[in-house]
Image (cartoon, rainbow, N blue to C red; front, side, top):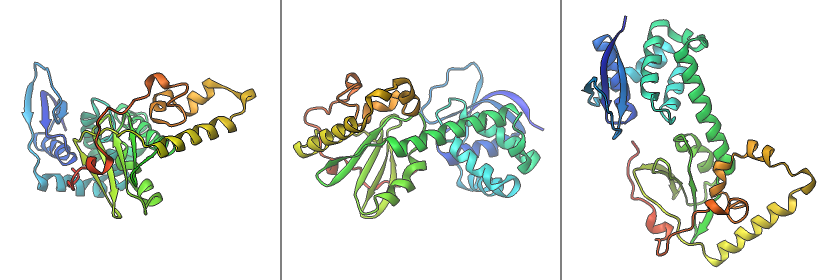
Length: 277
């Protein structure tokens, strides 16, 4: 049904843009060599085709996936879009090409390379989102709670409901330093903003005191006789320690990120109301 073609699809990096790439592949009856979104540089000897984002085309694909394949597949491709894999866009396109051919049965085709790769990407992303719910550490800055994370995947859309429900009476910000995006919750309204730069200001004396109290509690409940660093790094991977209060001045001090002098306050750093992509 689909012929392989030595062409690379380029689009604007949005989810709707990717759905338009899927639409284009069906119109042309082809599977491109690659799919590149956003500002990613593509060095290739292949032809390139820029696929514009047309809302009507994206809507047609969005309506067709849950109806002709399954609602579960729609959820899977949305999560896959948040993963960090370089070939995730092409993976989604190939997965949907197969899905529209076999329908909901694609969920059970676990031996298929495309299905297997997508399931692994989803599992990695959802596992990291689950860990973020446990490992995020907030600090108080003049009545605003703020936290910085460095995930591999774009987990903020997956953890937004958890934190807005748990801290519904607070104003807070979770900044994804890796992908330059943030969850901003204020006045009982949440939004995800993109392409921002943010740095925590210096902690106040009271905030420093609470951090020391937390570190003291962490050290006090530890059982020295059961100290097992390998087990701890399995349950709490070391790459998360840099933004965890209990490690910032102890074992992981070398990776502690000190706030720059003259950094602005959290209130001033909160981005304006920008509609999420």
